[in-house]
Image (cartoon, rainbow, N blue to C red; front, side):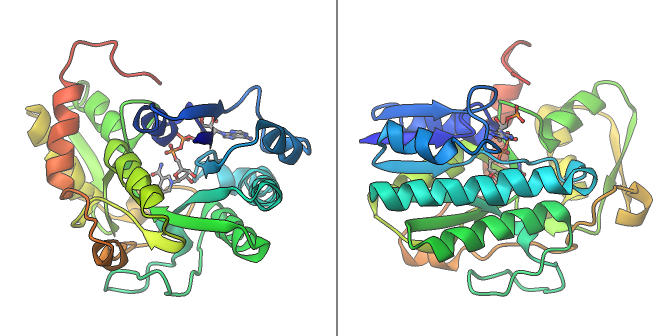
Length: 284
Ligand SMILES: NC(=O)c1ccc[n+]([C@@H]2O[C@H](COP(=O)([O-])OP(=O)(O)OC[C@H]3O[C@@H](n4cnc5c(N)ncnc54)[C@H](OP(=O)(O)O)[C@@H]3O)[C@@H](O)[C@H]2O)c1
């Protein structure tokens, strides 16, 4: 099978490259492959993949408030070209979306058919990406995930590990709840969903939920650091983009297919083993 993978150098893309290592992987990413270029559709058609996994995205949540047009150009217009290419090829398409399509007003896990109401520009651009895929008629699966971390790229876990080595006290937001997700586990689930030929919409995260503060505490414990973590509010954190206060995604559809990801603390423990390896293992 020929698998074209956008965002191949990103944290999920790198994990997907490994998981699909026995297939013919066609990796695409900046700078050679730019989702804002009008040539994207032809470029993909020219590569003739059987499956397109579209993990490439503008992912800087605060940056999207400053550069909303760029976020839309990458996440919506770029995705539209990918969907058109998939339709022309008759290829299967997997689009990676986000918990940030929801507004966070619910207090029970969000299901696939709950109505998205993004409250920031990044979430809006990813939701537009979902809509162009649904409207395209492509044989598509939209996978919403959340709070991703892995060995490659920037993420919350690596930021906490770095900060814990410098600061005695870390201040972390305690009024946003979500589902931390290890890129390695998500990549394995993507492969299972491809094998099962699942279409439509599905939520895929590690099981369980926590706040960023609870997540930071668990990271510190797993890594054996001795700094302390102080809970703060979203308002105190003063980030540019609004974040949903609750974006827990329901695992029910995934479970109905006989699939479940490990609980988030177990996943973090596996990641921590890798993180304790000699410096140089992580790539930015
Ligand atoms: N990270 C999360 O917490 C999270 C949560 C929910 C959903 N998601 C979704 O999951 C997917 C994978 O996320 P990730 O964390 O692996 O993201 P990531 O590490 O930022 O990877 C995204 C990749 O897309 C590339 N990219 C950015 N702009 C591009 C453009 N104009 N043309 C082509 N490629 C471009 C990035 O390149 P540069 O690094 O050079 O910019 C990067 O290699 C994304 O679709 C994201 O929206 C992520």
